[in-house]
Structure formats: structure tokens, C-alpha cells
Length: 429
Image (tube, rainbow, N blue to C red):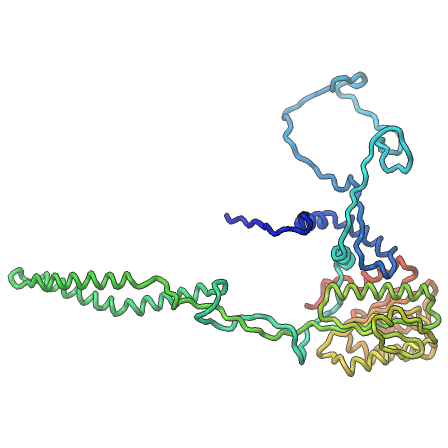
């Protein structure tokens, strides 16, 4: 049996392997703490790590030990109350009797603090986005291919040992041995036949010198056959690798945020936190996803990341201006045949009455046939308005591609985000 020992040093003398096992074992407790942390954090604190506490009783593990065996009845020394077979009464009171975690002072008993440790930024984000993915992500051919895959491209006589083709090398060695030994074996067979013929002659006619010569020839030929190597460097064949362009899972996410006057500062903060979660999720899990930020009130503009999150511009509300802008950007820069297209929209649902029908028609006729997925979140504690009603029509037409959820308060952001981007079993790879 072969044993592999990993002697790579871990940072700060910690065991990275043991840490990963610990995180996996107590994933349920850690994930619950992470969800609570996400709901109470501000936008600027979303990327840092998190201190997680686990009750000591939850990390205790069963221990197996050898017992004495057999049936034994024992009464411990110093016992003045119980006899063999008596049942011990349950202690009275609501507490556990150890004075731990009851929130008040105690003059008796001992307690145990919760086990606390800190998640790094990467570990924190890993738990935040565990089980999430972009829905319906497909591989599409591109004009400018950036992804390549190394594939086998025949055999060559030169290469590195790790790419040697054992089967082909042995076949070449076998063919070489046959080719090199064939004429020698024919000469050996002829010499053996001549020796037999000479030895069958009458002793008077037999030529001793000829016999000696034939035996020497036979010995020489046998040595030549044995000298043919089993395998030679000439026989070795190596797999050649070539870079083959592959279809790429390139995608673009349009982040559309309503910044009209009806969006209060609290609504905007919730929308920004939702889009920040989306931004971190895409940054962590996908390399080839472009982000396009669109802000709109009565008019829509494509803006940069800084302006999207921190600009104070406001105005009236015409949602169709943003959808029209998104459609125009797709036509100019992101052909659907080459890109996976996604849209995430956040709004309070307030819209100019005559514009909601326009939004519905734009989605059904132009945008949705091109998109992989459209996620709409409505940030409002009130009843839904006309935009939600028109979007329900779109969702009925495209049940797999269109999703809409309501966010009432900041605590709803993370659950809604997970629901919109949860991993689907029927995801096309």
C-alpha cells in the first residue's frame, strides 16, 4: 500500500485540513450564524469575515471505551440515600443546575463558554453563497474565444514521462523485436538444420570442423537474439497535447435600480444591499461575467459601479426607459447567440400608469426571448401596484425565466436573494 504524506506548511502553523473538516462538520450552525450576520450588516461591512459561536454541547462527540463486560450492580461509596434498583428523581427547577448561560449571577455551579472562532472573508462568502448559481447558464460559441482545453493530438517520440503511452510504446517495442529477430532466427534455423544434417552423416563422412563451425554460429546467433533489448528509447511514444478552443460560459448581468423620488432612502439602501450581494456572488463564483449598471427615474442611464451605488440623483418614474436601454445595449454589445443574458431589477413598484403596459410588452416581445433569467424584487411594505400586476403576466408566460419577489425589510434581503439564485437540479450544463 502507498501512503501519501502532505508536508506542505500551513499558514501561521494552523492545520488547514482540520479547519476544513471542522467547517464541514458544523456547517449547519455556521450557516445559521452567517445568515444572521448578513441581515444585520451594513453595505460597507458585507465583505469582511465573521465571528461565529457554537454552543459547547453541540461540538461534543461520543467517546467509545472498553467496559468491564457482564452484568454488574454497583452502589457508589458514600451513598446514604439510594439502594440498588432505586430510580433517581429528576432535579427540580428550569435550569441545568450548572449556572451556565442563565443570564444572572450564581454562587454555585460551573459553566462553559460557547466555542467561538472567526471566519475569514473567503470562508464567510463561501457560506453566504453556498448552493447558489446563475439559472440556466449555457455554454455558447464565441467569436473571440478565450477558453481553451488541452486535448490529445496524436503521438510523438519526444515528451515528458508523465505523458508516456504505455500501450503504444509496448506495441512499438514488440514490433521492433519481431523485425530485428526475424532474420537472425531464420539464420539460426538454417544453422541448426545444417548441424543436424551434418551429425546424421556417417562418422567416416562427417566433417568435425564443419560441426564446430556450425555450433559456434548457433551460439553467436543465440547471443544476438538475446542482445535485442526488450524495450528501447526508440520505442517510446508520448501523448501530444494541443490547445483546443472551447465554448465559453460568458454572461452579462444587468443591474437595474429605480432611483426615483418614490424610493425612500431606506428603499435605496435595501436595493443597494441586494445588488451588493449579487455583485459579491458573481465576483466569487464566476470569472467571465460582465456587470452593466443601469439607474433610472424618468430617464435611464448606464453608469459605473461607483455612481450606481453612491449617486444621489432622483426624479420621476418611467420604468420602460430602463428596459429600453437594456435592450439597446444587448443589440449593440451582447448578441444573445454569444452571451448568457441576465437582468436583476429592484424597484418600489411605483410607475407611471400608462408605462406599466409598455414594460410588459417590452419584456414579452423583446427582452425575455433573449434572456436566460430575469429577477425582479419589489421593495415595499404596501400592496402591489400596476407594475407588479403586469409583471405577473410576464411570469405566467415565462415561468422558468422570470422570477419576482417582495422585500419588506432588510431582514428579507438574504432569504429572497437565496430563493432567486438557488441551485436548480434541472440546471443545464
